[in-house]
Structure formats: C-alpha cells, structure tokens
Length: 75
Image (cartoon, rainbow, N blue to C red; front, side, top):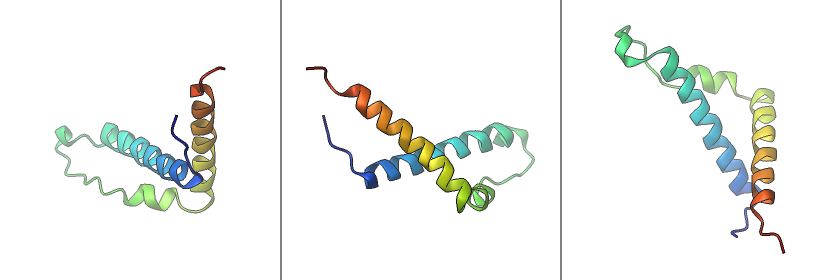
C-alpha cells in the first residue's frame, strides 16, 4: 500500500472540506432556482478560516489515518 505523508493527508482533507462546502452550496442554491445566486465559495472561505478550518481538517485527517490503518493487510 502507498505511504501517505502528512502533506498528502492535509491536501486530501482540504479537498474533502471543499467538496462538503460545494455540496451544501449546490443544495441551497441550485441553479435551477433561477435566483441568480453565484456559488463562488466566498462565505465558505471566510467561515472555514483559522480555528474552524483547523478543527475540521484535524477531524478529517484523523478519519483518513483510520481508513489507512484499516486498509493495511493483516499478516
């Protein structure tokens, strides 16, 4: 199995957070509503800055580590 660095896990956690925010934005402001709302990620980037981002990313990295550990072959 591939070895993952902390940088790899941090990048994956960042992608997961971005995906979660996009899912929420799309559910709330579906283009089909025609209300003209733009999904630029501005609110998400303000909300998930500093402590909030650190907390969420730590949780996601802990989850990534758990997935990696359970994926290891049993010898």
